[in-house]
Length: 357
Ligand SMILES: NC(=O)c1ccc[n+]([C@@H]2O[C@H](COP(=O)([O-])OP(=O)(O)OC[C@H]3O[C@@H](n4cnc5c(N)ncnc54)[C@H](O)[C@@H]3O)[C@@H](O)[C@H]2O)c1
Image (cartoon, rainbow, N blue to C red):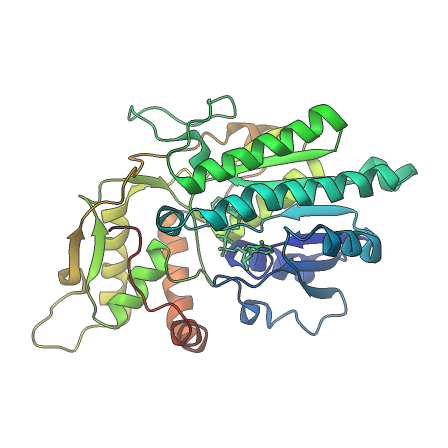
């Protein structure tokens, strides 16, 4: 690796993008250009540890704006693009799908068009080694009916929510730009992530922060929905394996092999909090007494589970954390990073559950 090589990350102020950038700056000699429009879920405080690095550049840009994208490609001449910018919350997509169509579909279209023109203008090794990695979700596959089924890279798409349908559309666009124009793309479909710096509307931080305030812990339906949880740094290591070692045009599923019911996740959070921050309140013996069941979200998929054999066998990736170790680390991070959590909650987000009306 030479120091002048550049990775363009979209959505780098979000949960996964910021973990990716912190990792690249700490562990490689690549320069990172982060383009992010700073929507409600983008937060530059998640990048404080790298903001002074000479290898880090931030540009506040909307990926739907082709003119600004053109300048970014021209000025920074990236070697690699890792595309994470998206509207990412299923509940918000139910309340208002427009921004999901704009960013996830139209924005991805603008980005691959600019990436294609830029790539076509390159020559020699820079052209041969250019890669565009599109980061997607296992939710494009819909839900699994049988308890033994797993999503493989061959599973047909069957998205249920406006979010997953918009991500599925963007995957199709990216694949078509490979088939039609030869753009050297790779796609990853990953299961639910958790870890530090996750915006508190998502299940795990939502429950941790509500429990600490001794608020109710609202669980959708009967809480038996199964998700395959992956610690965010394991997702980051998988993305780097795919972008450096993956085969052009291929899709790689990424999962943690930690299939857990939502209610079990919430109970485990309560158990660890009981140990780390014992309740000092006569009316409450355990955080688990705060659990309540609320009306399920429409179209709620019952089960996701990923078969990640391909990335494990072909690229030698495997997750480092299991759910027990990852959830404990995550809770400890939220306990130690009060300022980040308070700043987020002082903004527009007040720990409500969305998408249930
Ligand atoms: N979180 C998960 O469990 C998970 C799992 C699999 C895949 N993914 C995918 O990974 C990616 C990142 O997810 P996340 O959880 O970090 O999301 P996030 O919501 O935390 O971050 C998204 C980032 O994109 C930015 N953004 C939104 N619209 C933009 C636009 N038009 N132009 C530029 N920037 C824009 C936001 O400001 C934010 O910083 C998404 O593409 C998501 O679909 C997420």
